[in-house]
Image (cartoon, rainbow, N blue to C red; front, side):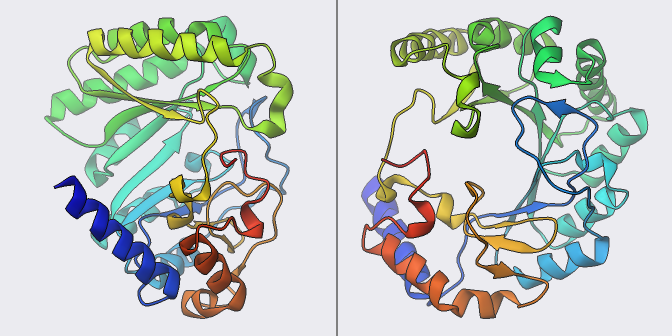
Length: 319
């Protein structure tokens, strides 16, 4: 079965690289640059801007063959007044829909609205197991309030007998919260006593190298093994991204299959941008034209040939 899956995957990669189909796995969309926090792990340096509902619809309709929508970006989604309409529209097209949120603004009204729309997953951005650490990293937040908002969403879901949205957690590892990873496992299990749990641990990006210089590769390997052992005991699923810092070649990367559209329409082949120029803008050229442009074609062909495209040269996930 694994051999059949591998063969099918390779065939899809070849078709994709040659431009025979547009079988991209996920579309990542940033709908706002505005945020209510000033997190030390964030690199946002943009002028505040929201994507309009009409712009969002235009993007979704262009990428009709993609069936997974991930609302990401460098802002707080709930600050965009069209956010719930966007979720509804994406779901109405039969998409798997997920989004990331800091849960500072998710009150009763927002929680009930989410449950009625039924997005598949909400990722809670929570980077600490204690008030002191969390509020040091996410400046302007309130630890108790965020935990209460998480518990409240769980409570309302249970009262309504709702299965969605599933609640997962995203933890950006840095020198301030590195020692709290094990404690975080216990915290999340205490909050979600009877639900399935998935936690994604992501190493802070190299643009913030000063935030990761306190722990060595040996430290990472040790905490990696300890965390996996504890999570198994607590029935928690884990996802590790660039932690420990294990480099891979372009053959091991699948991020190129998840293009990213920024709030202004700029189009990138993945979300790890590292200051690179966009491949175009979906508000100026439709996706079919972007797909057929020489630079995007060369990008795909290089990946098919096992060569690292120039766009990816600075990517810290690659060797």
